[in-house]
Amino acid sequence: MWKHNNTYSIHNKIELVKGGADYFELLKKLLAHAKKSIYIRIYIWNDDKTGRSIANQLIEAARRNVSVFIIADGYASQGLPKSFIRRLKSNGIHFRYFEPLLRCSHFYFGRRLHEKIVSIDENIALVGGINFADRYNDVDANPAWLDYALLVEGQAAFEVFQYCYQQWGHKEKLPQAAINQTLSRQNCSVRVRFNDWVKGRNDIWKTYFNLFNLAEESITIMCSYFLPGRVLRKRLGIAAKKGVKVKLILAGPSDVMLAKHAERYLYRWMLRNGIEIYEYQPSILHAKMTVVDDHWVTIGSFNVNNVSAYASMEMNFDVRNRPFAASVQNVMDDIIAKDCVPITGKSPVFNTNIVKKFVQKTSYELIRVILNLSTFYFKQE
Image (cartoon, rainbow, N blue to C red; front, top):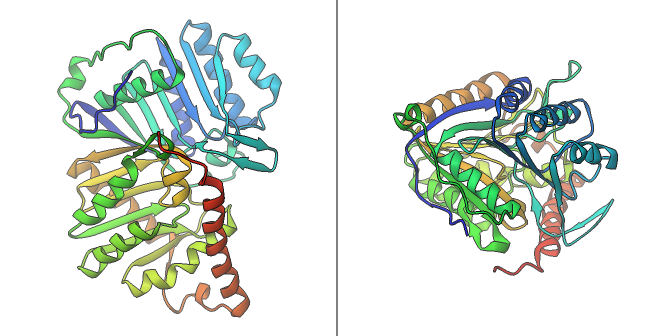
């Protein structure tokens, strides 16, 4: 049985990848150059232009005798036609769904596979928040949702491969890492972090808890559905009160208005605690990325809310590298300056009548109830 190493590995090469055309062009190149294996764990895979293009690239890889293994979430990807899946399987691709406890077309009960992982040839991994669908790509002049992933080559990528290998259920012994000499000269500290409350894993939650405690100068969070639980909210408030500059980049337009109303219910608490809020405007924000003190970065599929904490399987990369963290901070500051609207006590979102205030409060309480109903059956194993 594979055992997760909770420490940083140092022999890694990394690159921040923006979603949209940049991500899918990179993914296409990686799939085209795969020689041994491809493992994919994905939340949403749609039968659209982007989804079909990826399927074609995977079929080409399988025809080159690359072993391809795919697990898609059984709820979020249930729209894939049977013919789509048959075509994958008939070309030698191993495909299966991660099935929830109970589901139908309008109901879901059980933990979700919310990861977005691509593992190639054992030492390359692409992990972030980007699903296989047109809305995450730049298609037909429609801007992609804002998202990011991290490309890693080296020891941490091999650990991702080990995880994918074990989760598929292979009976053969895990292969040993073979890090090439070029990568052995790299020196970027990276660790793989998981969240799967059913299995007793809360690594990513602990990353956020510890980063909020360690922060001395700044915390910048970019998050699509920011609804931290009581403990993380308290730690973030303490950090702000001790002088840490806390900035939140949150969604302006949203695909889940219930979550957006609930999020805005927390704005007053945020502003009271000296936390700066910026709403992203050009498209829907879907990224999940945080930088602390120009030193640490965490990026992946984990949203800072209780769905990710208690109801989903998630993966993030933590990076401990000052030049990289500073570059990511610059990216986020540029987004704030060019694409965001600052939220203050005088912003239109606060000029709400009693009905809108009621909607925000009710949305917040409703989400709490939904979380309790959807996760109460879990038992940590």
